[in-house]
Amino acid sequence: MKNADIRILLVDDEPDILEIISYNLSQEGYQVFTAENGKDGIAIAKEKEPHLIVLDVMMPVMDGVETCRRLRKITKLEDSIITFLTARAEDYSQIVGLEAGADDYITKPIKPKVLLSKIKSLLRRISNEEGNDQVIELGDLVIDLEAYAAHYKKELLSLPRKEFELLALLASRPEKVFKREEILDAVWGKDVVVGGRTIDVHIRKLREKIGDHRFETVKGVGYKYVE
Image 1 (tube, rainbow, N blue to C red):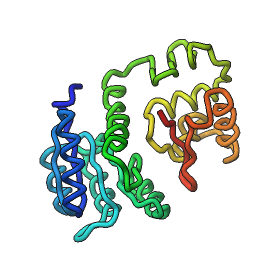
Image 2: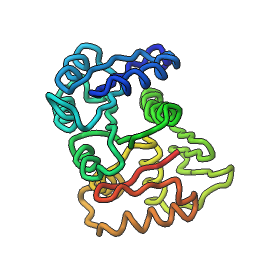
Image 3: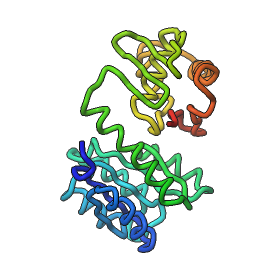
Image 4: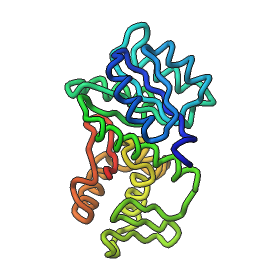
């Protein structure tokens, strides 16, 4: 999908932030829409059906968490990616936001170029999902889902089945925070009872093989793959 076809909605009560982010995204060719509160943001989202929604947490009229909850109840927006803008000290807001249905969060203050890079990473999920590709390529990491093979820096990784499936899950949507329950259901199945530490052990092994910086722990929620 070309940048010109991608619709992004920014919802923030600070005009300066909206202006800066809008300018940088528009320069990349994206269609950008803005709102200064959650209520207006929902109305625009229903009309424009954005691929990505960036929500500030603290806003008048309706805060970001409640806005996210309502957006997730709208059927035609169920595939929209939602990410929060949160202050660095708002750990509680990050967890609540993810539980409300957000895919990720971006901490601020953040430099425009870094934000743009983050947004591009989030949008990459769209092309991955639309292509339904059997090969996931993320920089030095290449995962062949059909062959059950993964290469890192052109070296074949020795991965037991569950490690491979966990890596493939996290890499399928880089930067998305997967909740522990999601991981257990997807990799081990709902009918298999395993301890919570099982995920931690597998993540530790993947970190040893690919690099600690590739896997981020979101305290109280789960894990994500970092590009």
